Image (cartoon, rainbow, N blue to C red):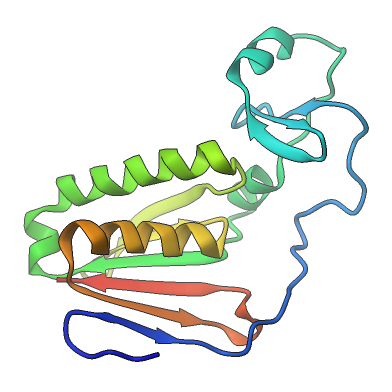
Length: 168
């Protein structure tokens, strides 16, 4: 699907399922907690439960493991990039970054494995690296919904990595 002007431009390939090397082949039995992001592993999934984390963070009863999202962040293994640029972005940078932060917080409540690895400046634009391709897409769409502009998605071979470009 391709639209010109102030619309989304999408370059897609046939969807293929990919194996994430950071997802464990064997999960721990019972609960576990991530000491870095405070996520809790329960019922074969990671979730946010700050009350449980606070109760067991100093206990030996619950094992501590870095969750796959934190392992990607520590290893700097991004699966998504969001590039923000343009005169409008430069003038409204703080507002746009607040939109991104709010959307990031909502995403983390649903899936704590979605994390922002880093944010930096490169070639006159702001780059945000994410642990999942879905988070980069979600952040780009949130900025587009709030401010319009040009939004483009580019996937790598096998859909293992996405680069999202927003400018206005």
